[in-house]
Length: 228
Image 1 (cartoon, rainbow, N blue to C red):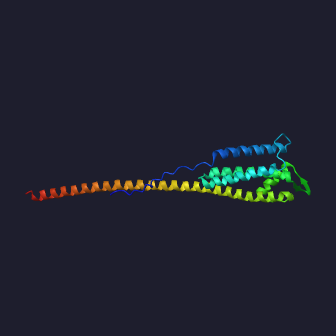
Image 2: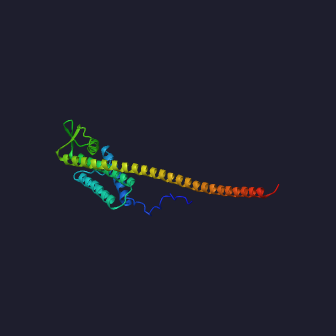
Image 3: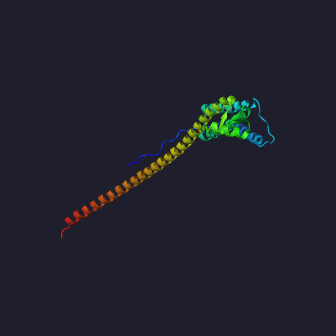
């Protein structure tokens, strides 16, 4: 009796996912670190490349250009979830600092007074990005549209982060299920092989039994035919 073949079918040859633009990733890391470091230096009153006037809007435009490029890469290539998550986190960090520069220029309202300092602007940018809306710091008239735009961008970024984390966890669970199924298939295959060996052993014992019965029958016949 031939055993049942329960081995998993051969997997098709699938090329691994391509990373999401290594050159763009390196550039995004460099720009994010440079922007954050420059902002912190300015906040402490140290030397830095001061971004004033319309410069904050140019930086903000660069942040959104990077995010648009990120989405274009994700839609046009096979991006791994981990690479995409890293890009989204970089884009969110860049957006927070870029909007903080805008709020330094446009000004915010705190305790009824207008403020233009870096720390308050960075705090408000984080609050606006996460859409918490504490209400202790509010945007002035010229900062309302950038604040609303950052809130929408923050919602989108946070949704993409949640989706990427969920996808990573689901892929890990899927991998665990596949491993369990593969182990179960192997156990079934081993059991099927043992069953085949057992059937062969039983067949050999049956042959020996038949041979012994024939020998007993022959001996009986010889004994009956032998005169006393």
